[in-house]
Length: 423
Image 1 (cartoon, rainbow, N blue to C red):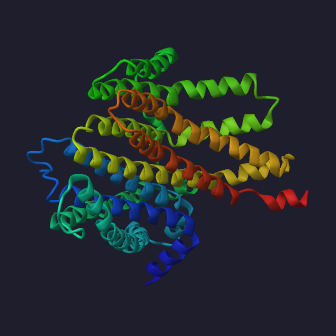
Image 2 (cartoon, one colour):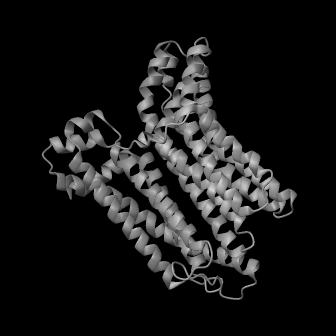
């Protein structure tokens, strides 16, 4: 009972972190449930994983993998920022097994609320999804149709997530020592991913050559193939080109502008911390846009791809906000020091807005260039409607914009207004 009580106290103490973790599980459950129920709809005629002659099986695998990655990352962000708390429990005489139970209780409490609620919301969305399916494909059937296979597939994925989250948490306890947990809050570092050693110019060319080629393409599949070259360019720009540009800009032009100097510094730190997440999100945006366009002659598959695109964008945006929110706790002391150095509240707000505009603007702009050229090309040739183009733009823009405002809101909690008011 002591461990359960301690787990509840910890959940209450870290309520904001727990809420983000809760939302990740909730949205993952809703999307997986809705996705499988659409795929297993009798009118869809999709043999998932068997003799599937459509693009749905690889789409399903991709979406499920992205959903599980979001859950595992959220779990690791949540647990790895409890280092000092865990070290105190260990110093109090708790065993690694008891520590694992302590973490399991916290995760289990979040899951026991988020998963059933996600299934309920997913079930309530069935009439809407089925009515959209029926109106699009002239299918006559029950709007409340729920496939038994949906429950089995969703249950299997959720059990897999719960099992691996528990295993990862126990592994974290076994690997970590009291000293390392006291001095390191995060064990997740995706910035160490190394790519081939290319020059900056080559990365830039890899990014800008595909959009030029897009102007002359007529085969939808070709968009996807050349977009893969562009992804190599995006990888290099984020990992190599942008950090070097920021460093030169700080040294040469920003020394006299403290707001720009600090804003660029924080922006640089952000892209390094969430490098892996940015790559996954940008990759997903471009690939799912290309798949949706490629399958336009198969409306059902295109609908599944579009639904997957919505799910991935929302999940990845939430995961990035979760990670940024975790990093802000460590940045609180930095802003306190800035206040002691004489920075005003207006200057601090300028630094924050510059950092967040650069960060989310960068996330939005890199895939958006590709999407605009591809969709305008198809629109001019009357292969897509303006309505379809607007849907793609909304799916891409809205989650990023909402993430921007959420991050700005989270920043308000660490601004040391009391120090500024005392000066």
